[in-house]
Image (cartoon, helix red, strand yellow):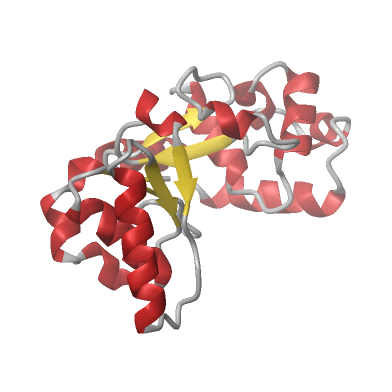
Length: 199
């Protein structure tokens, strides 16, 4: 099984973030070895009893190979710290997430990007300003990044897509569960799926 499947497995354990996952790698050598380690061995990697209980519960209920196959079939790509495609700017923060799941392509264009986010209760003025700002940015080669929330986020994405430019959506949910669900069916997004990147 692909090594990244084990990264995804640990990513599903509440309480195992960048610091604890790095500790697992340091102690066990790689994610597969950590996944197959005993509770006693994992406790030496500074995992609390509570986290170990969560891990053991997940491991007993999750068919990791089946889950990995499902991810592949949905066209979801998994990037880890080890991958050259892992976003370079994200690596610069103090505790970058060990795993990013994406749909779409990360290109050199994304190095020039601006995040536009705002209220879900968008006003007519807010919509106008967001539309104008987004249009100006994308026509000057800047990729627009936003969440996928209702309101300003959606306005920013739509403005970029209407201009025929790239837009990146950073989701609060996993990429196989788009929220809010109506954003799966926005007409201009469906026409330009290749222009959109979900992370």
